[in-house]
Amino acid sequence: MNAYERLMARLKGEPVDRPPNFNIFMTFAARHIGRPLSEYYLDYRVLVDANLAMVEEFESDIMQAISDPYREAHDFGSNIEFPADSLPLCKEPLLKDPRRLKAVRKPDPASGRRMSDRLNAVRLMRENVGDDIPVMGWVEGALAEAADLRGDTHFLMDLYDSPEWVLDLLELCTETAIDFARAQVEAGAHIIGLGDAIGSQVSPELYRRFTLPYEKKIFKAVHEMGAIARLHICGDTTRILPDMVESGADIIDLDWMVDMETAAEMFGDRVSLCGNFDPVAVMLQGSSEDVYRATQECITEGGFRSISAAGCEVPIGTPHDNLRAQVQALRDIGSA
Image (cartoon, rainbow, N blue to C red; front, side, top):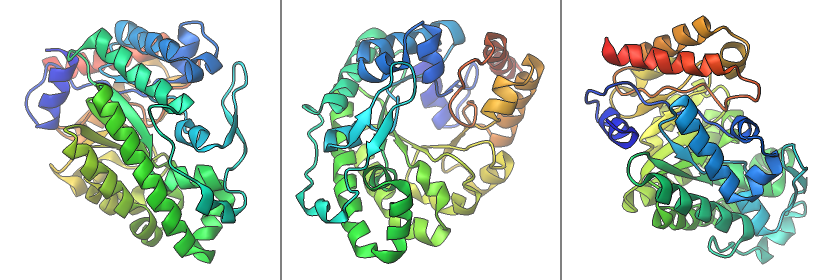
């Protein structure tokens, strides 16, 4: 059973040789192949090489074009800096002055410097793995992209002070996400991941007004393109779990703060859960025995459609033995 077959069977609740391994590798992958982080962000060939290494050495079941939240923001015109071997920085939000919104236009995924780089990554991934391993493209959710363009603090205040302005911005971000998703599916992506990290920072009421309708619209478009939809919201999403399942996502990532068993009972067979042991306390700082035990517990609690991953990105410095313990736990579950 190859990785693509494994995923498709798991999504349907059918038997698999082992649950899929969907760890999010970004900075760890770049460092693992000895390349500075800036190259991972700016050169699609480095991103692809890093993903291939994760497949070959740690049995990852996914090739993922995820890198950082600033692909779209950069091509909108935000001032983003890329230190040689550190995380990218937004030096000044594009919409520091909200009056600029009227002049902002959607970036073109095919010509935007960083969006087109991701398209190249997806194409090269598909050339390398075909249909043996699922290829995942990525877009920023409307709420997350709006916060990137405006700045988190100002944007959270805008939700209360200027809601109509926010709705206009969210429509623009949604159209951009759909355009970018379509371009990635056309380039060869089987899955479109959507990151809406700031969604865990708003109330359920605000999530239902300013987040959920746009996730639903994006995922409806993704399904019409024939692709799988994956929702990723970092942090404690316990309060919004009933709403997240209404997004239309096929896969929902859960961070370590969320009780997997509770989520599984709430979601039933409507979605595949992905996660969710602590990427720092367990994956980075724990023993291989800790990782093995946590992996099996999460799969047991998550149910027969669940997918294995740490709750969020695998940190730089994670012991290789811990990553291999996760793989062994999945094999043992599959052979049980």
